[in-house]
Structure formats: C-alpha cells, structure tokens
View 1 (cartoon, helix red, strand yellow):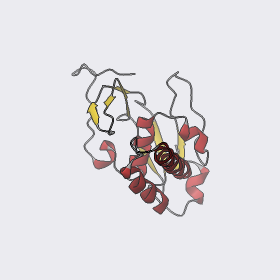
View 2 (spheres, helix red, strand yellow):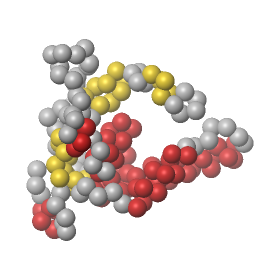
View 3 (tube, rainbow, N blue to C red):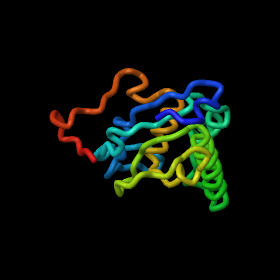
Length: 164
C-alpha cells in the first residue's frame, strides 16, 4: 500500500492491519461516561489495513488530555454548552490530526463500498464511528493489539463473536 507520500515523507510510514478494529453494537454507557456493558464487537475491517505516519502530534496529546476531563452533563445550561463546545473542538482537532497522519487505507464502509482516501480530509475521518476513530488514534500512537504484538482478535471458528 506504499504511496508517493511515503517517498515525500521524512520518516517511513507503517502499514497497520485493521483486523482487530471493532465496532461495538449494544454498548451501554452510564450518565457519567463509564462503559457499563461492552456490547457485541463486530470486526468490520478484517483483511484491510491503514498506512500511516506513526507519530502523534502535540495537538493530539493536548486534545486527548482535554477530552479525559469530559463534557459536563451537569450544571447550568451554559456550562453544558461550553462543555459540548470544548468536546466538539477537541474531536475536530483529533480528526484533523488523524487525517494528516493516515496516508492511505483500503477500508470499506459498513455498506461494503470503498471509503474515500482519508489523507488531509478530516471530513472522511469525521464520518467514521467513534470506535473506528479511537482505533485510528491508537494506531497513530502505536497502540493497537497488532502493533503491540499481541493481537487479540478471536478466531471465527473458536468464538461466538460476530464478524462482518
């Protein structure tokens, strides 16, 4: 999946298999943002991969730190609006930064059609699910199961886990 971008890049890109990218259906999240039930994972990018520059930016680190604080669902209407505005700004920053790091991919959408090239196109990243966005963020940070060398995607023959 090597591209002209790799030759122009000052550092080598890496290709990350996306077999372990899961979208969770039926996930339950409490009012305070804690996942109380994982839901059923669907591995929607099996056999697909992402080519990226494996270097997170300071903007990603800052946005992640701000997101860790979360948008308040309590307090005055104005406080909630400020919290959601901050959430929107930080997610936009993450999408912008991920779009600049993902050089190419062969991902297909949930409809089975090829997704548009993501490089420098944050709108393509914003159209993904939350789970896919988090997967790409972890991939840029070098923190997917495949990148850590301990891929944990169960075998289709040995698990009842749903597969796409």
